[in-house]
Image (cartoon, rainbow, N blue to C red; front, side, top):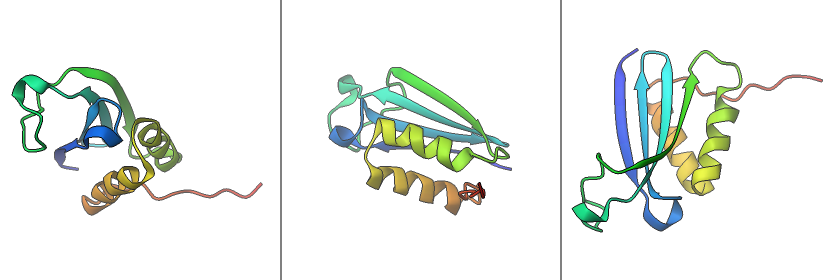
Length: 103
């Protein structure tokens, strides 16, 4: 698997305003960051050095990875942005398909 990184400058619809997603091999990392106003308040401002306030790691092979990733994202941001970030993962061929089990 390749290495992908994307910074989502969401603003008021996200705790802290910034989410960075990283994929390295089979590891997914979701990082919540506080907006760094020293670089500007526009969405085009560089937020790569913003202060991290949370970091969550997941393995792509885990059976509950879709649920775990979506729970963390829903805690950080709205359902719209959660869907957008999961769609980005899927566009990079990262398998986050929901698994359903019978009781």
